[in-house]
Image (cartoon, rainbow, N blue to C red; front, top):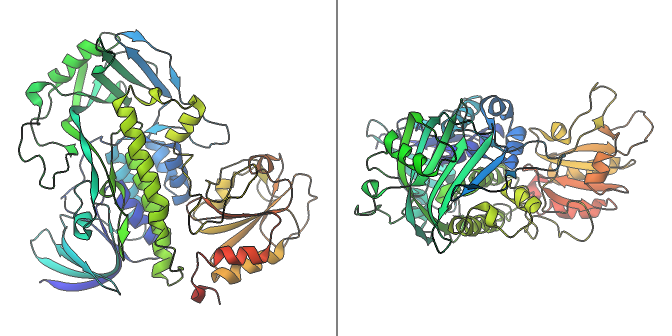
Length: 542
């Protein structure tokens, strides 16, 4: 044994999910180490679709500008069936949603998040593998193997497994991972083509057999660069890995295969069959064969050990839901873990991670399997507007969570719903109107008070949370200017009142992950104290 060491949290796996978890822990002052068994990041454009909800999260994290510099828009999809063009799908969202759909190669996502994590002096420990772990009432003891082959025993308060579909953490917890594998194999490739398709649109070209089933398919997602796409298509027999044995040591048939990578000629053959216009592929940057499974764990953690992302749920890539769902797993868990490390979390706060995120994982697995077995997202029976919001992950919510107030009745966002953005907030100092996101960025719990004369609630929030709740006042349109004792912004155009359905004084408690924990109309100190008592430990409420 090389040596013993300690830290608050060990994060295993340095993909987008692990990097998100580590960065959010470090931003909140939690000591953290993040390890990955790979000696270097993989230079592959695997997960490329970025959902509007993820961009909202990155806004609150402080990484958005770097993402906007690197990403390209994903404006919609062109669909062809047996060579015939189908109605174009435009990914339209309500005007108050601040960000649209985007595409970004996974290696760029990892670069941006890794640079963001480095702001807190934390780097990924490459070539370091989790061998085993054991937990007790006070913490977790992990055995790590370093690049030199030496072993290190690490003692932590918590362990977070973001180590993918073949997760060591999941296996060590003994979690079930029920599901199955899709029979098809696919090729992935990052290539350039010389067609003149509309900028920012993905392409889905299918061939249907006589019974109406899809027997050939090409899916292309635009990437940064002229004519560059991440393409997926069915694998030809000569590249099939189905006869390899064993498939995977753990029986999970998911991810990139080690067989011969497809060549440019393999990609060109599919393009010759399915491309809507003649085109030539060139500059293949990367290719692989991959298999798809659909599985989900029976719980997202046990005791002081948790799983997130592909370690907890795997499913078809239809609609680009996987990485985005995992990032939200990590975001949900990190703020709760930080409070727990600080001794400020109610005992029920950490268990709410499973209560809130596992139903989301179950829904995503079920929906993507349905879409994969049909003719894509457009086969969904939901109306197009609702479907787009769902694919954007803007309908993810936690109504019924044990740490969220009952939703009650009425219009506007309710407890457990995403706190929507809005614009038109003005102040005597800011020369331009602000967005609500500007007021929430890089903050924790925020008490939004709509109306006047609510100053006493701010004191209640501070005392009930040990000073961990900030307060911001939104003044109704027409409120005369003048001094106020709290940070206040005028709802000059009435946009906040409209989107939040606030017609009279109302208190909204916005969580660190941008969801409403409570909505009280009229505002009530006793109800606010009761809600905060489900989140914060009594010791945090002097």
